[in-house]
Image (cartoon, rainbow, N blue to C red):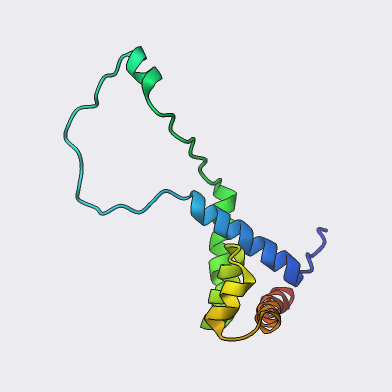
Length: 126
């Protein structure tokens, strides 16, 4: 029988960071209904060699998207200001900026973040 995972606040924080990275890897949302009817431009090898290299896009795996969707369900268990705080930390926004937005000092913002993560972890462990 598989052992049941005991969730901690650090596990939840890591899960949110992974979810944020997965969100960044998803393709951009484009307006529907617009398309290009022009044919593709055929370029020579010399033109291709002179072009700027395009960054390689890494798409998220299906399991990463599943974990992202699971994280979206967790967010409903906490208050809206706590959601913003948790996602800001997952995005690695500095504490100074977060505390300025919340109107409190860094320690209070960190404490609120820990409480929000603990709420989620306790709900997962229940």
